[in-house]
Amino acid sequence: MGAAAEYFDRAMALLGQVRERELGNIEAAAEICANSIGAGGLVFLFGNGHSRMMCEEMTPRQGCFAGFFALVELALSNHASIVGANGLRPPLYLEKYEGYAEEILRGFKFGPHDAFIVISTSGIRPVIVEMAAGARRRGMPVIAIVSRRHCENSPAAHSSGTKLIDHASVVIDNQCPPGDCVLELDGLEWRTGPVSTVTGAAIVNMLRCETAERLLARGVTPVLLPSHQFIGNIGADLQLERFYEAYRRSLAHLFE
Image (cartoon, rainbow, N blue to C red; front, side):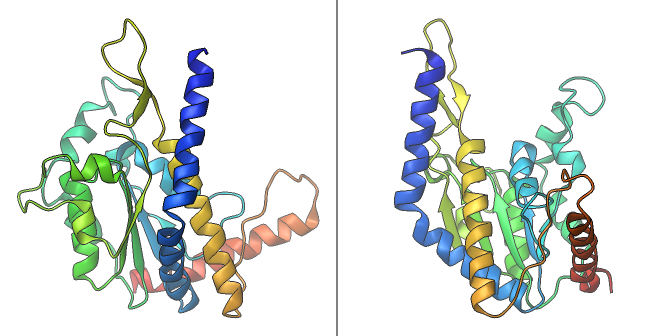
């Protein structure tokens, strides 16, 4: 079997584990999200580095709806140049810098119904730990999407000795192995084939769908972002405007 097929099989096996082992945690997280959004609150998503992609998989994304807020800090995630300006070195340094997450949080006025999702496969970097701890101090429930195996078997990197899982109300295990990658190839010292994007995106979409269903059961109809690729579709254009307005109104309490 070639490397491509082996990676596919390993990724699919991990997706099966998410379905088998984490559905209850995803449902518990969806209950938090539905309670928050249904009461007029926001559910923030934060992840630095590559985990930022899971935030934007939730919103803005076709099929997303007002109530979720991707808290994207560019200094921690805009590193596609790798070297030079906006390279990889500064974000890797900043995510280890204690106190940085609190400065991000101070930029918002959180409401009584807000909640937080913190995404990190390792779950040990100071900015991640402090983001979860800061949210909890402000009275918000915290949902963690993390690799339990990586987090539990790694030494704490924050001076408090705590990790992301220590500050979470609900922990969703993305089932990734330590180091994320699943494929060993002869001639390579390090593994390749990361899987946290595959399982993380599945978790995010399962959580979105479950939250929508629970909101509908409460009599709350989410305002969805439609596909904007239906050119000339007046209905899609009108729905897009409805989404913009619903999203704008959902943010009102943040900057009062």
